[in-house]
Image (cartoon, rainbow, N blue to C red):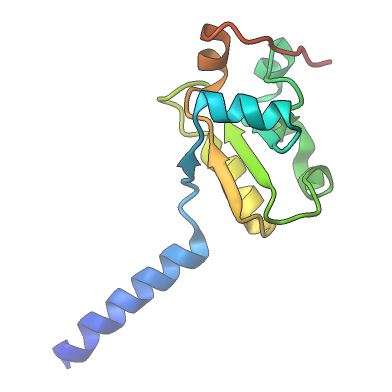
Length: 131
């Protein structure tokens, strides 16, 4: 019985991980993100909250908090398109909410800008203000 139980538990753990999603994503470098923005080949999800978003976000980013159920209408039709979620900085894990939401909608190329808005500003990049 023990010989059957261990492999079964391992399979259940793997299935749970695959279907639940960890919310983690591969990191995109600053230079790669800038190139993707310049070429218009990225959709950005800002997960910092509306107040922070309004003070300054990466140009073109979606305010995750304000979108609610409308996120699907703001993301590209191509489910393999690059989607990048970010939050405050390397120590912030809020980006995982954006990753999970995009993956739940079927997006397969979701990445994380780990430097976040603080790293973007520190690099001297411009920001947009919200409403």
